Length: 333
Image (cartoon, rainbow, N blue to C red; front, side):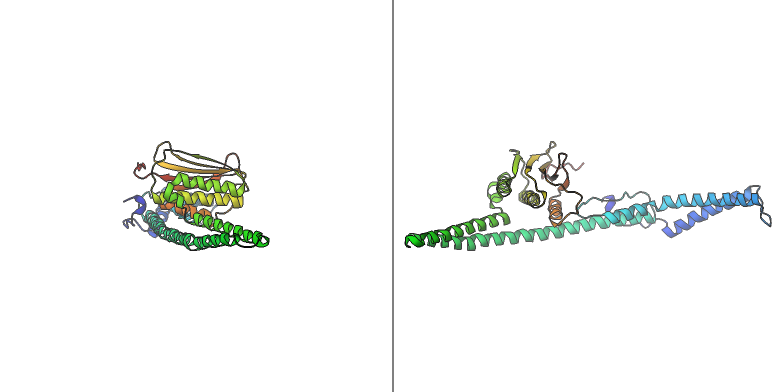
């Protein structure tokens, strides 16, 4: 079991008694030094004697403060970590060094973080799985019910257009084009809800379709660099990569005001992970707090033990990197 997951040891001196022992040791040492020194105290106290007493008291206070600071410093580090801890950035731990009440507290806090991260990961997995299931259901209904209904309307309008008089044929054809546009929109919504191309043709084809649609909708200059020999990540990991890319491109279209976007998918040099990198030349992150979309991407990355970073790009704009470990090749050393 790792150090961060141990329970309290319970064999150290309680913190209250450690403080009392430090204070007692300092005062005892100070008293012994004064007793062994030639200094005397008369009544009334002379100026030189007052100076000696003040110096001795000052030395004891400094020694006491230094010892207490060393003893209680881990509590300050624990407080800072508690203020900034984020379960979407797992692995934040305090070094558990030494023994005693403070070390037991740090060990318990690290164990609590590990438990909360595991529970959040499990609950997020269930929630996202339910979300994907609902998307699949809605997409299927759009395709089967609405799509087929609009197709029947188009066929009926086509037959009607061939029989109506010429003076109303243009109006029928206009309604026919409206129905055809509605059918195309329904199909696009269904593809965004559940990318069938991902299941049928794989991740690279799905990302290619996603990038092409982004370029069509935004008129941005979009480049893509996809490796041809990517390892198999598994269905869940590929869906995570696709959803992160989809959310990232949506954010670029809504907030970045970018006219150039580059999407890259490649294997890392060590071969133990696949990297998705999306860069743009837009406004950049600008220190804004993370929204629901960004936190959703982090939760998805956690599902496959991946890591996601969003930083300013060196040439302006934003750079997103998603590392997804390859099953069976991750280096645990």
